[in-house]
Length: 585
Image (cartoon, rainbow, N blue to C red; front, top):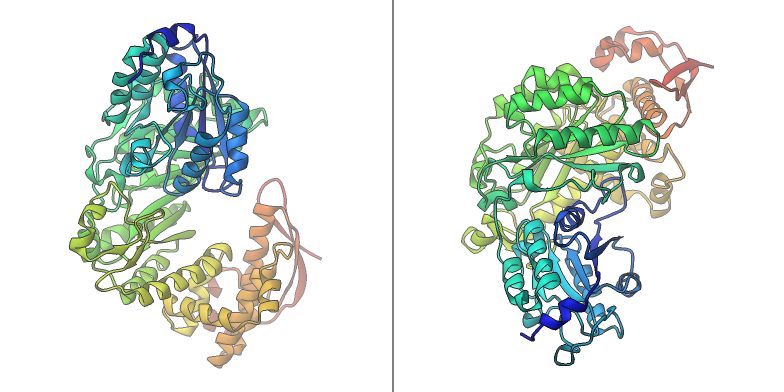
């Protein structure tokens, strides 16, 4: 290691670029990890007057050369990349270009013996990487292993990166020690010692439609497919004073109309401590803004009080089910009591809370029929959405370590998807993926939750079979017609596709007499959703009195149609400041 003692004394300001390549555009695209590191660097008494930090955000659509040039324009002395499973390849590509770019670094002092090598004073910036994927799979990233990075930050990066740049700023001879500090994962930082990027100006909530709100780190559970599977199995909470101040900052930005429409709460088991969860929800309920909150919760620890509070603030809740088979759940470190799970979800439905469920196909011990059964169980709980995933065997998890033992054939590069298991061969996984895509299209994007089980009931068919047949139906639709249904400029295109499939199914079952009531129901809910979310007005020709066909008597469609009289009429669903309004034309 060269002598850096003379070099550090000459450097007035260290310019650091922290780069995040988001998975996609949207309100959740916030560089929180990089911002937390930046905030820690700016708060350090030794570094705060010696550094200049720029957060650089990118998306997968941006070519690596363009991103590298954007980074180069800052002329940084050091560049850090946040590595996640979706951006590892793109980040490595951009970093590799920085290695080769001429005059990429703002060299204040040239150190002859270090010219062209990896550190300050050379002809390129010092490159480092951190984040979940760097922590879990550092192989191949560092320069000595053929990668572009000079060192890898493992685990929580705030303290390690501060230690590194203190070494750079104060004593160049301490560089080796700084590198060593950064390369070792230091678990369990005291969260009370960390500054908030939302409060120190690193991130401005007024410039963000959505914010990531970190309340805690860690998880008390040990699901073997999750990074926490080998963690401490404890939860560390940020101080309440910080949390309250961040919430106030979000509210102020929202009330001023400058940002923060959505708040994504980063706490993987928000209701692990139910008393704390109640207090947090009460604080949120006392605020005046209309921010939408999204939480991850554990179903088994829900109670009616929590369900009421979630519904009262209009929050969205995401709940991990993963599989409806208790044996499969046990093989990945989860416990499932189906009756208890369903009863807790029932509380959310009783209170009108909005919730979604997560399901994973390809888990150890699962098979294709089990996936169909899991989908049936989940849809029977009336979720507002379903997130359906092929199993990812992530580095750093217990499943990654036991993959050979469990017979999991999987990709060894991101996104690490399973290819086959002893009970779930590749062809079956492809069928599960086809079913999952069909479910996402028909149920999620088609906003079918309000009518799905009601309309399926007369057919007497399992939801999974109905949706699998929809996948086959889609394959028979001519390409030009399919493009018309899926045209984003046609707001009722997907609804028309749903109705075409329903027509075919009910005609095949010789139950065409139910279709006018089904058309009324589907078109009403589609129009209501478009008015509420997109602000689009829709004309609807009803075959029955809307108050009747949308009332409780129509939950049994066969009985309703046998008793109700037709009352045709033209109506318009109008978007309003509150709930959409149905007006007779």
